Length: 169
Length: 381
Image (tube, rainbow over all chains, first blue to last red; front, side, top):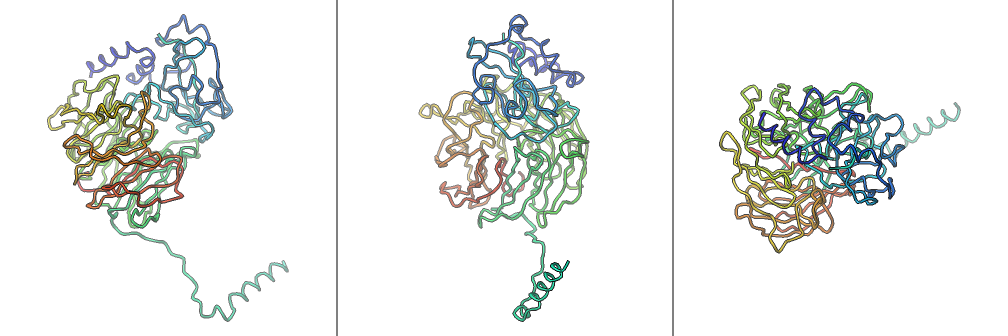
């Protein structure tokens, strides 16, 4: 087991975008300790993270650049935004991540697709793109998992956000 | 009140009219079904993606094109635990005490095929995997004694359910590996995040012991999907690029028996995809795979064709055009097999002759997010 974790960690260290979240899956105690606020501590480029990316495109459209690995209803169409949950829903503290290229500066950014939870599915703006999506046995990059986990309100999925965590190394 | 009295009198007069004197009032009854699932009966999941609290599965008769009944599966319904004899099945489900919120209870509810009435319940840990339906998240072991359910919280573990006693055996950690692929009545393996396989065994009571993990078997840049197919003897796993990895599970530590490709140079641009990618007909050795044209990152796109392979010869023997798309495919296991497909967003369930590929019928007007198809079970599944 130790060797396998070593191999996993070795691979993850080569891929910051996926590794930063996958790391958490192998630590029981830490699993529920991840929060959106703690995400910047993960291995993304902090220097670049300090600078917000330029924006173009429509966050209510599936072809918006941040949605390259999303699978679900866009919170931007459901009373929330790319970085906020609709009223009365609770952000999932744990999630999957993708790496999406911003057409404004042609740089790659790490995107956290936190689910919003506690109300039935929004049903608007269904969007499924799978750039870099991994199978569920590689959970940190898998968009086939209901990520309403570790919430107070429970497992019911409402919509998906697309939060920029930082520039990908 | 006068109006109501007059209405009541009119009703009575109507009932008492001479013409109805010869009419025998109908009696309202409940239908029942055959005790055993018939060869061309098939369950199809409707995960009700935009109303996931209302997950369900429909039982269809592919010969008649009739819907026979359904079950309600709770939140994010997955697949059914079909007993090999076709007489009973279990439904793993998630329920919240206040509908969308409140205390979570996970349960396996047992049903008889004959009446589809909810029967015995086995409460399981409130950790069952919730996501897109995969049969590998809740399979029944060959022989039918146990079912093994994958948990993800994101801690990973499995819950074992005794299908005969209809009781929960317990929860067992899986050390960073997930999904469940049975290889015998008391043997299975899981896939680990690093591309290794984790073997495990069940004792007579259903308690899990993990074995020695395999070496890394699958490439990081072309990992196997969750959608492996059991031939009755081996597991076949597919990769986004079109490789088929055949697993040798005979020894204590799983290994790769061989790897072959679904795609030849002439097929460049095609690849497997979908949610339920493939199905295998054991008597003929025919492997049915949903294929589509697309590049990288299209590994979950629906299929536009089904390519049929002789799995033993690793050679394509047929192409079936779907005249549309499908996200799920399954084949019945009888001597006159039918080929089933479903596509979320469409409400038709399509039935084809599995040998010719000819479309026989569409069963229309079903739910809007049909996913996993489960044909009538066979012994040793």
